[in-house]
Length: 162
Image (spheres, one colour):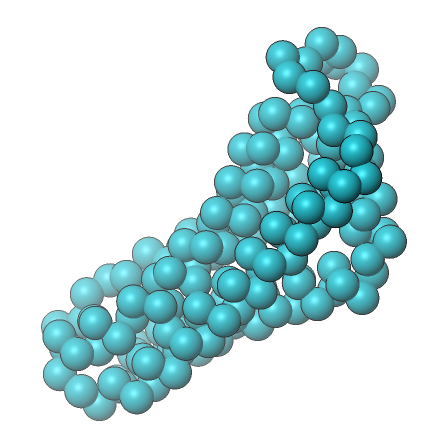
């Protein structure tokens, strides 16, 4: 039972992570816009000065990017919250029922990896080369921390209960 409770608590923290980041992005909308705009513009690239694709400077595209990130973060929160609730309801059930109840927890943690690995590390880090500026690099390092911790949580939650 203790392992199941730990999986539920960690899923709650994944949920809170998504909700907190999305809400912080809304509360600090202008700052978030500035960060995304700076990264997408690819300005200040002193190491790899040639990009294989275009920079994005269109305010509309930057707002769409922000909306996708914020919506994705809220989706992390909602999926993981549903997963934590499902696991809580199945906490005393047989192993098969508890394993089935982890579906939304796994989806929530997986969506977190889509946001912080896919959007930030792959698109931001590899395409927009955000590691070349102090602002972009700090965001990339933060995303790496989230990817590592959420990846471990995902592996732990996904371990079969017997």
